[in-house]
Image (cartoon, rainbow, N blue to C red; front, side):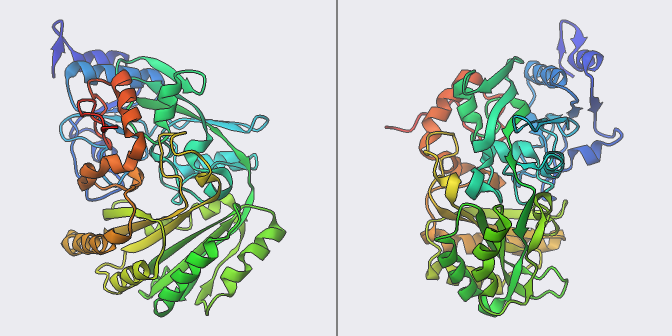
Length: 460
């Protein structure tokens, strides 16, 4: 390993480091380097499994001084695989799972190794919840830093809209508290700018009184998919903030292999209002299955888990549909009829309500207009299926392109989407570039949807 003053740097890290250092061939190495997306197969030269902020500081200082590529892994769900490095240093935060709920002030302080399952479980003890993802195994860190679309966004905004403060280890190994009052430029950038500016070792969130929700899937035959998606468009045009509705084209979860169109409501308001607000959706058409029921909020966050198994091979494309037009619906349904893998699906998130009543420049996440976020989730179990699955995703995305806006959701970007990073940050890119040059001018943290400080700003 690289040495400093005649002393091996790794040995210096070993002497002070409170976590575990794992090298190739070591116990637990293959499990530690493995990400959610089975397409990613990178081999770090060293994995530093941190247990504290002090460990993170040591790991950052070591990686910077040794001149090695640094990857930061928390939940490991990012489809692009930027949480791993080939031959560099992986700073692994997955063991940092501390969480403290303050029910009096309705805040939650959480470490970056938590998943949304962990977070929701801790908050639910006190009848509280924060907008999280739609898959419980997703890490809180990556979802938050990229924006945070979730079931509660209509009523309580995106995850970034509920971030109160963050503890950050910078490229220089300093610890900063970022909030509206301290380093507000950094706090602004963290809310949608990803891992470009440092490693967040603690998140403080605002939480809300949510115990039970009315939620669950309503499944229709694929033969009715066009009318189901058209209904979804019309119905969501007037839904209250408390009701968020997702839609999907996928294979039936009963194992029959049947292709279905799904509507999935989640109502976080009063039970009497929830029944009334969801009634029209449940009455539409001739559903094959109606599994809508009252359930604890953490449960709704697990409903899609079977569709996102760890280790499956994933290739995604995504974008925003300002209007779920008949033409766009035709493309989606026609494409799904010929989908090559039973694990591949199309998912639509309706961004509305409180999430859209935030100025586009109030946080780094700029996508604040009512839209449908469309995800072409290419997924298969066998490498032999990957080429056909990837081709299907690319072809469908190309056909859908004329209907998409210029914006992209960075949490859904794949490894080959590097050329569209600026679309993820929109008009906030230039300001993000300034913050990047302030806190990481040497681009130490570059394995992300990168804001390269060497790039020119966008002309005014």
